[in-house]
Image 1 (cartoon, rainbow, N blue to C red):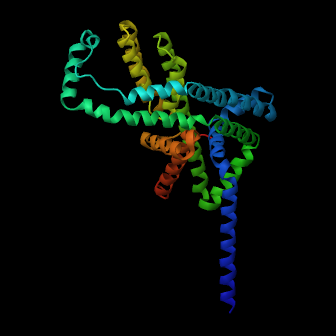
Image 2: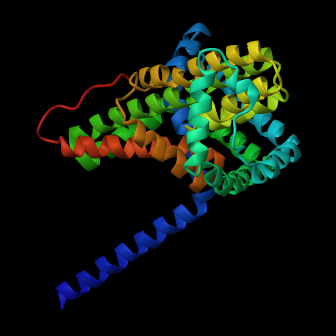
Image 3: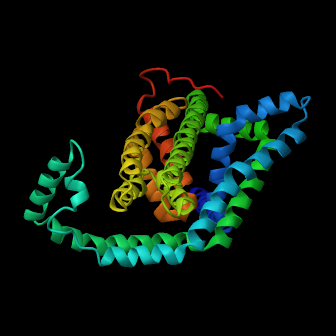
Length: 357
């Protein structure tokens, strides 16, 4: 009878632990997204915080205060302004969506395209070939989906209060992590070592490198492309340059790039007769659109060598799962999972690559 009693006690103990873990996750579910985002930000900027602390006479409290203010200025304020700009111009975006649903591709190209130097004839020929192959009907079928996408995007950014609350909770959690960073890192290393021994502790360093790489590659690249795109739109005299810059930033964060904003702006410049501005903006579009091919891989490889497809899947999946905050959370989760998977596959074959803490 003794083994049966032990089996029953073990079964009930496992069930109790499972129910307890499920209850904890259920209670903490609203904070999972902000906590992951805060951890990503803290890991990515930990070295910066240590330098700030050294400049402030080694006072951790002052360094945490400075880093919290920087996060408010660099994270919450720009994203909040971008969201408020989009929401404030929601009617204009809806009007653009309505125009997209009624758009029809002309059978012949406009005169200004035909008269373009060097490339006008080639574009006109390609235009006629495209219309003869049925592209006109294809555009008419696709444009309603573009309008639905625009309306969905406006609806996602419309809940400003909830998003702002998430941003503020993220900053608060990041401040706590800054103040107790060493203790938290030691706890994570001990937990990993308990699970996987020395290899588990090394995987924690790998995960930290992946977090830094994604944070730098996605965030910094999106900010640079958005700023350069906004400057080009303003200099070309494109209307609603501020709104389009905010939309560009969101699209760059979502790994869709600035082309979806800049190319229509180039078309508008030529259509309105501003040939010089159109040519200049077209050249600027080629530069800005291809900037991420150089900047993003360089920044990501500062932390970890991750496939671009993995980042793209993380951004889109995170956006659909967590909303706009998931744009940052998704790539980090997949990057950490990918890093842990590779480390597990390579276990026993070779030593893992080392990343700086």
